[in-house]
Amino acid sequence: MGKLVIITGVPGVGKSTVVQLALEQIKEKYEMTNFGDYMFDAAKEAGLVEHRDEMRTKVPLESYKMIQELAAEKISAKAKEMNIIVDTHLSILKPQGYYPGLPHSVLKKLPLDLLVVVESSRKDIMARRRKDTDVRKREEPIMEQQRLNRMYAAACSVVTGVPVFVLKNEQGKAREAGDKLRMVLERI
Amino acid sequence: MGKLVIITGVPGVGKSTVVQLALEQIKEKYEMTNFGDYMFDAAKEAGLVEHRDEMRTKVPLESYKMIQELAAEKISAKAKEMNIIVDTHLSILKPQGYYPGLPHSVLKKLPLDLLVVVESSRKDIMARRRKDTDVRKREEPIMEQQRLNRMYAAACSVVTGVPVFVLKNEQGKAREAGDKLRMVLERI
Amino acid sequence: MGKLVIITGVPGVGKSTVVQLALEQIKEKYEMTNFGDYMFDAAKEAGLVEHRDEMRTKVPLESYKMIQELAAEKISAKAKEMNIIVDTHLSILKPQGYYPGLPHSVLKKLPLDLLVVVESSRKDIMARRRKDTDVRKREEPIMEQQRLNRMYAAACSVVTGVPVFVLKNEQGKAREAGDKLRMVLERI
Image (cartoon, rainbow over all chains, first blue to last red; front, side, top):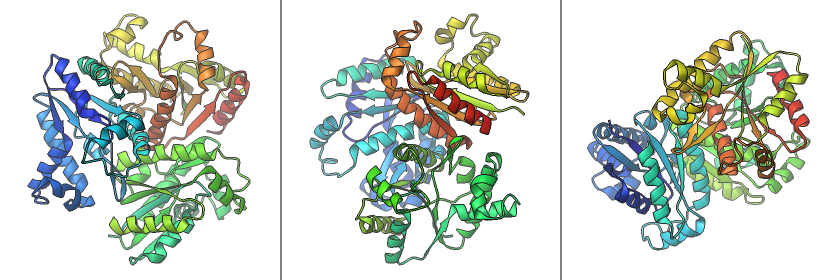
């Protein structure tokens, strides 16, 4: 049975860099995956979409939960054989509001060992977003969502019994954050 | 099957006005109901009270949960036939502390589509309360409860998988808030 | 059936003093217990530890949940015969992050009547910690944990339906806090 770690954080928080730095130094092998990729596969199999860019527009809200649950099942099957870090979101900002990325119905399908919440200051998030054409135009209430994500994390922790590791990623200190993540990965 | 939307917010946040403005402009028919009315009906049927004003004093805490669950069942039955907006509270301040308005036992009886959290600044809430003889004398920690309500909302979202729509209602901008609510009601 | 109250708060918040002052004045008999003591008994019976000071080092994270659940069962059995106040934590800061002190699997074993969250200012907590050799050297993010604990409390409240009583314990006003606690104990 492998270890299953979920890593979360609003866009621009520097998740990928921190995970990469952590995995460079660790002895154990971890596979980095994206919850969205598994959701795309599930949506494609369900005949809802053909291309990745249709995920935002063609998956109706009432199918979203089912797609999330199917993705969780696939990840859970994979986690039986290897250590996995899953990149995903505690909340997803949709026109209907903050949609839970890890509702109870999804959590109970995942043999989760750790929930990591990566956080940064508004300034650092904005600076990283300016370099990223995908997110730089988004008008999102960054800090509101980051604060709300902690509340979602606390609820996930109570529901599952899994610890929440809050990881600050300050501009220019990604290596420090990567080291902290590596150390916690070695202890779970 | 109708849509079921719950709208919450501390007294003085301007819920009724915003809902009224949203429903004026929407094509679909929504019935506006109050969770407290259903609780009163349930308490009356259970022989606990005769008049509405006895709800605060005559329903013991140990019966409160049962009354909440009975109310949820009635609302759920009604939601099979029409779209409903239910006005209620995420937390109710009682002498025993913050009592959950939407505990898991109640949530699981409700086929909920959306949870709306209306919020205002302290100044705006105070101004509205001054005009309302029912609440103006209450010495409540307004902002503490409003902040705590978000935490309750996040937990409700994780437990149910339902999105949380945070709606700011600024003094003098009720029409804007009403429009935002209408738009989200049209998308669920 | 006795009443079961859980009292929480970060070290240095003055929990013991407040409970002691509350119990001095109350007519009903309450037994004050510590969740950690029950966990120690359970861990000892499971052959994991021999001495109390091994609890931090010798109980692996994967056994922690089981030990928590066993402790909850013992407390639950005791609560059938008498009123109990259980001193415990909403979150426990471990190398793996914030571990939930009251996950759902533990909560569902406890016939809980009230969850008390004792809070203090950073200054007051620091002052009390300076006098306590056990905690004074800890480098913990005090206020971060205190804020996070409210989120855990809200999630516990939604999951169980139990009210959360937030009790401020200001330096020099322990008697006031004790009175408030006594009054709420008399009302549940």
